[in-house]
Image (cartoon, rainbow, N blue to C red; front, top):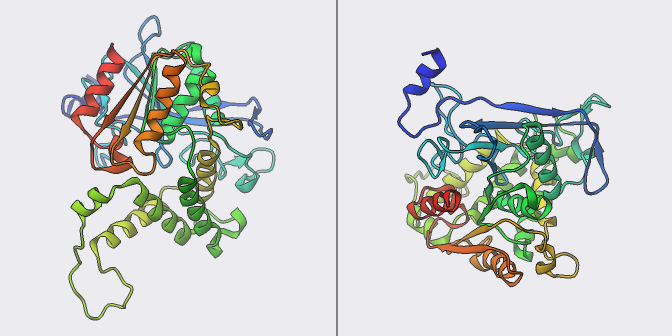
Length: 380
């Protein structure tokens, strides 16, 4: 047994254990849907499990807006920070790494190792910043397809993702129908409604009105931290539910302190949101946030003529769409209409709605019913 195997053996049964990322690098110019071009790109990714002999057991996981490639396992024994979907991915878990070879990449436009606004443009030697091309979900998926090609995979057993990851999943089913055996889209929608666009733009305005933003040309050690933190705080509210917030925080106050200023933190929910904002600034790039949220707003499977059925005609694989009753960002009906359109077209599709009180983030929290849905759908 080598040192790595010894480390992994110390983890509980069902854990992926120690993981490391890899980088897919392409030196071929990549053209965006908008017509913009980058001279090459990098996608950072992680894999778990092993590819079988006929290469038929690969699953691609697509992450949400503020997620990344690290969806399972830990990087070292000291920090042991688990991946964002660790409860879902691993030996014996719903996405079982004893059966499947699992891939998760940071999206194009991201800020955790993949090419994005803060990456260095090799043609100028400077960060792209706002010179980065206009970004769409389709661009993200086309870049992922290049990664899948590089791994020698012609076809995926499944593509699965939640929120922005669910939108990528649907785009995969439309653009590469012959390359996936099935897909599962969780807590997503066919397009943003006016309210979702409004929330995103308010967050973008918070960033762009921060003096430190400097029209996107800011130093990595001097980001528009205040604006980005506020954007995160507001977005995080949309990921929760009224019932969940009330149960967790209610009107609980922090210890009274008469010396505090009028507008210092008084309620526990204020403390929680400010903490979320501060933590986010330390791990995410403001320009990436602008680009990714705008890509979400542009995503529209209804098309210019409003015909969702027309956009979904290309889908071939059986699909599962999951909505959550307490999700008011992408409410159940926004998920259900996708399946209704697929069924009108005679496509194999299923819809499930789970009554969890965690709001939009329900897909990121462990729930036996969700576990069973994913396990059954992937294995059947």
